[in-house]
Image (tube, one colour):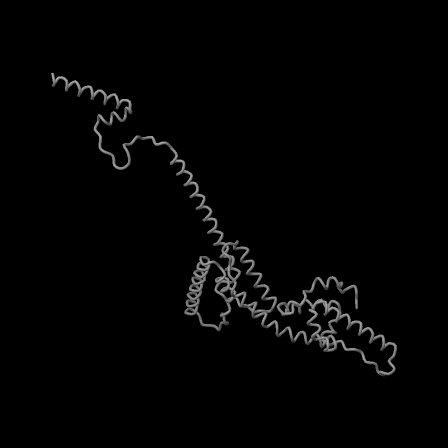
Length: 306
């Protein structure tokens, strides 16, 4: 084993995820483990290509044959040690009686491949049912969706572009979902009109099946949705600012002292020139005029009596 090209044991422990007993991370584990074991130069003990040497004379092996067998056993034990570092004790106890590392590894592959089918089915179901949290930032929510999509690809779960686009539409809030659905319908109609025009003017040529191709690619759909969301957010902030300014102005007007003197609420009684003149002169002039009228009435009454 070459120590110069092989990573250290600590790198192996840190770089390979431990196999979950339920098999939810089997595909990722298998990829990481295979690469790391090949770097440790013992992969032949896992795939069965490295066979234990057999002496020509089992009763009297030569020194070279004995050394070769000892070196192989050392590598076999090292391979088994690497395996036990990354699987649960219960899993190893279940398969350790199989014999060689190659047989133990083959049994583990068969078991967890079967388990991973159910795990991948659950991952696919959970992805298709993902929904956005309206109270959170849409950028962060779409990042969460994209990360889940990339994880599915890591586990070899196939999601077509059409399915991914449908998930995005269902994931979005209702207003944005309606926006992107309408945009997609418009682009689909435009595409069909262009196809009809082209077919009428040219000779039809065989085309590939586009059932798995979305009208709007998922990446472009996410970009358009984010632009629309940002536009609506900025418009809402601007409208909120205008309403706030209007409310401040109305409050200022309501606190001002009225500059007119009315006779009360409701429609006002028509007034003559004299009364209008009194109102313009103020309350003191009105009192003086009322006093003068009272004295005038009293004098007229006195003359009539005498």
